[in-house]
Each structure stands twice: as C-alpha cells, then as structure tokens.
Image (tube, rainbow, N blue to C red; front, side, top):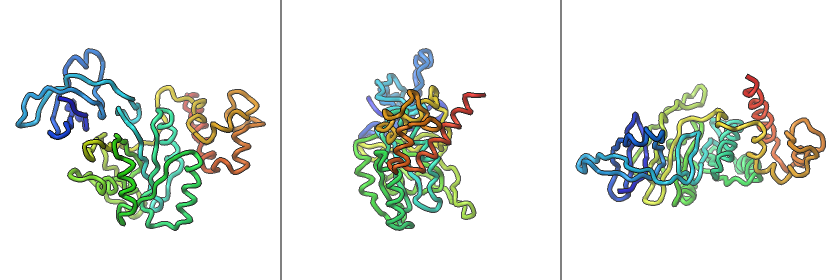
Length: 292
C-alpha cells in the first residue's frame, strides 16, 4: 500500500493513504542502518499490521523529487509564504530571507499578503511593485473577510505546498479556511506587540483533497542552509540576474565595486530599493558568520 508521510513525531510516521485514511507507522530498522531518515512529504510503501487500529510499518521510501534542508521535508512543488499586509506590517527582511532560502533550494514561491481588507489599493500596488518585478506570484487574501480564498485554492491544486510565515499574520486562520476536517491550533495575538505566539511545533502535511497537500512549517529566520555562501546570495535575487553581465568585475558583490550592472539598475529604478538594502544586510550577515 502506498501513501504519503504527513507527520512525524518521536519515531512514529503518520501516512495518508488516499481513500483509506491515516496509518500510524514505525520505520524499519534498515533505514537506520542505511542512515536514511523518512521525511514529512515522503511517498512510501507501507505494510498494514492492524487495519482496525490503522497501524503499519514503513517498508520503502519512494524516490524523492527534491529534499529541502530548511525545513527538512521532501517532494515540495511550491512554497506559499504568508505575511500580513498590515497589523503587523510586513517584515521585508524576513520575507527576503525566506525567498533566498527557497531560491537556493529551487522551490517556486507564491507570496500571499493576508489581511488585505485592512489596506488601500495603493498599498497593495506598493507591495506588488517590490516583488512582481522579481518574478514572484503575489496574491492578496483575507481569511477574516473571505477575500480571494478560491484564487488561493486554485494555486494549490495538484501540488504539495509548504506554507511558512511569521506568527500573527493569520496563517493558521487562512489554512483553516481552505481545508476541511483538520483544524490547526490558532494562537491569540498579543495586542500589545501585535505578534502571535508560536503555535506550530512540527512540520505537518494537511490533505486538501486527493491531489493537493499543504504543509505548515515551524518558524524560520536563519540563513543556515549548509553550503550557502555570501557569493551565492545575489543568484537568489532573480531580478539581479539580467543585470549581472554588465558588471565590470567578475565575482562582483554588487555592493562596493564601481561599474556594477546591478547598482546601475537600482539607480534607474529597475530594482527595488527595499530588496537591495536587504541584500546588503544579508550579505554582510553571511560575511560575519564566516569570520567566526
């Protein structure tokens, strides 16, 4: 019997089999011997040992399409990164960190600004102007007002999507609106600091239907993907790629060098000032990490 690991806790793997349900499974010792760890998102073969109580063993892990390091999951088609359009205001530095991590791991991203009912059309256009020129799909939703939820569902069809974003942006509420049956724990937002309590403690996949899964992942903030160097950072900014050939110096960092195609594009307004400033901050942060 084949299924997908939708949750893993303390050596138990919960495998969703379409049309049958979720089985609680242990992994065979052979995986430990081969130093292979089953991941949330893995497609697996299981042997059922107790149909009534839905228990079984993971017998084989099917070939992975991809494997992310942060978060440690597999077979991801898309990342949906959710921030609030307001309350709290978007933290662009955090958003760019996530985008860089997904670019480095070659996962397409859709950016969702929730709570869009709180902002003007002008504010929406400002947010789009930062990320659309970089090639990102941007969608505005409101879990509370039910705005553009069908558009969001359409983007998720036929995909396994990892969902991420800071606390307090309505992420859990939004996911609850687009799926039936399993409700994520929603955390209360502290009115004083307008940030949420962390309510997601482990990666978990939620089946949306036979052909779609979403995975909520615990908070992210660091750029600690193994092998990620400061020299890789510019390649994770898609809007830089067209301008890099016009840099005079090979290996240009796009910060201090003269005759830089990226800085020229910035001066001409073809690259977002916010995105570029975050690039410089992240570059210097990666530079400091390597020193110590």
